[in-house]
Image (cartoon, rainbow, N blue to C red):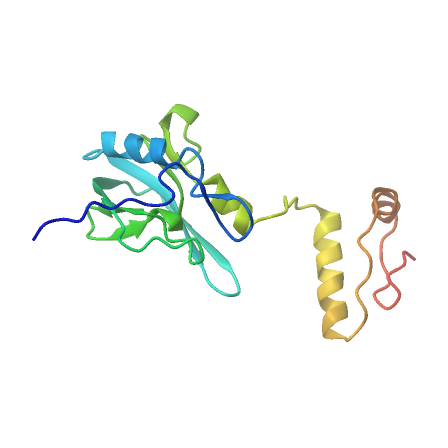
Length: 180
């Protein structure tokens, strides 16, 4: 059986996804070549599990031997299935559209030279806004959730001056959304 020569319309990262961004990212093919160079080495990766209601992150200190980088026959920007997947020594094959980062030598906080694959487009799509956790953001999120449960209309997000003022007070009224 003769293997079909596959060409993708995204050969030079020119396909546009639904959000108007290049799919896969511009440096995708360069990263594929980097991955192929480290076949047989131990890799560490951050895998994302996306469902309708949440995003799970699987990031462990366990290394896996990269056995191969294989073409995936049905890439699809709508389901985030990229044109390649990696084959690991534990028998799994994982599509690169499900992986945020692959590094060598160490799992956590690898230096930039050890990161051989990084999908920033995936992160931007899944986490479109920068999230900062602070007492104010947790307080506002909790207040909005509780208000929703109680059937109250949403309160406008606090401005910086209001947030500073709220730091000085001990409580916030849930019913009106104004500082006491």
